[in-house]
Image 1 (cartoon, rainbow, N blue to C red):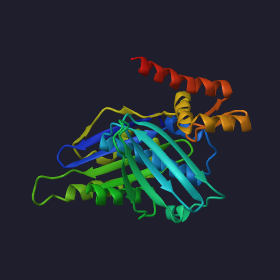
Image 2 (image 1 turned 90 degrees about the vertical axis):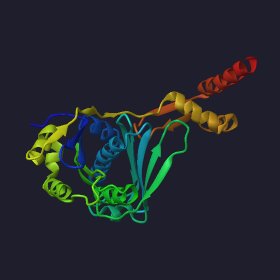
Image 3 (image 1 turned 180 degrees about the vertical axis):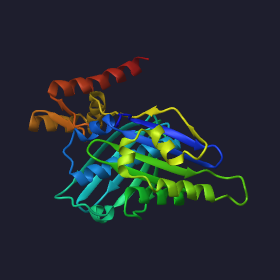
Image 4 (image 1 turned 120 degrees about the vertical axis):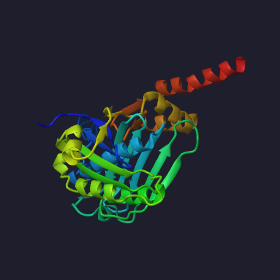
Length: 293
């Protein structure tokens, strides 16, 4: 029976230098796709990228957030997924025309794939360019991890209109001069038998047992994954202050108000002249307070 989970489970091979993670997104995934009417092919790609983002963010143990961005010049113009170190997720996409099922590169055209690690503490963010080598998000990301992080990594991803899910296997550094490749090869071969419907329907603990019941596996407690957008009225006010009073007043004179639309959660924020005056008055009050002190 299918059960809602919205969680990530880590597992460790006790007698081999291997680790894994499984993620399932149900309500979290619905929160992403309920806000926009995405074409089916784009929806499924976004679901796979959401599952991948959670798996990679958990692996890297981020303090800030990981942002996966695909910029394209084909029918798919933009696909963005952001996952924080606390496994808070949001995503959005832009496209043009009809999207036919096919290879990812055909949808993207002349595009690029960028991974950004945003520390959210004022320090400079790290950006890595991911080569679009592979026919799927899983292949592209595992090629990147193997080359840039020098960690053998395999990903299995799936998504539909109800759920998104994925599994990651990673080979840990081995102290031996001649590493034993057999456990890794066996683990990958077994995981290659996974069907998409199993990733989307079978509970994580049951799935690990189904695959590796002959291995000594340590399964860790589940970590919750939730949908959360970081937009807010205060953040929009700060953005308007960055534009400057003159620019904001000009927009209000022309249109009657300033409207900002969040592409991630579909929330709309409207600032009329009174709201704008209040936003800029807050800055003046803070400046005056600093001057007095």
